[in-house]
Length: 121
Figure 1 (cartoon, rainbow, N blue to C red):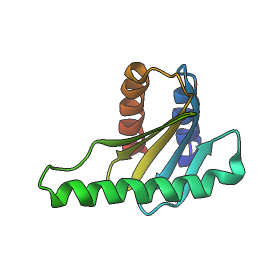
Figure 2 (figure 1 turned 180 degrees about the vertical axis):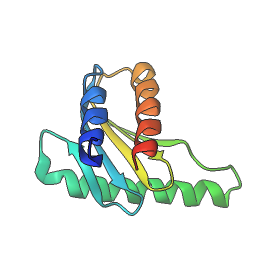
Figure 3 (figure 1 turned 60 degrees about the horizontal axis):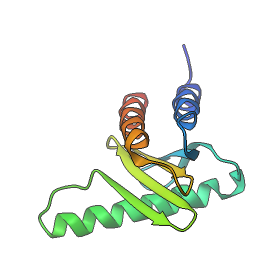
Figure 4 (figure 1 turned 60 degrees about the vertical axis):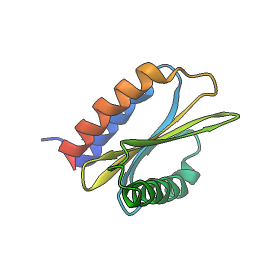
């Protein structure tokens, strides 16, 4: 039987094969890094914590406005995009893309991966 870490590794490895995906991480809802595939691993824990904070703030803001719960948060910058999506009640998935990455396929794959992560956690 595969360990949780091995299962998360497989999901993130498959996700990183999608064109335009540079890095991916799984974190707990409170921002603890569970697993990551990042070129700069030393930033993975901060990356996870800040992404959890960002999604939590978006959930609070949108819920207060009575607009439901946000599916994901996308931050676009000059050098790429950061996508944070919930992965069940325990986790979240964070993906960093290249600057010119098309979001269509990436968002489909991120959605699939978040469902797999939900089942793993």
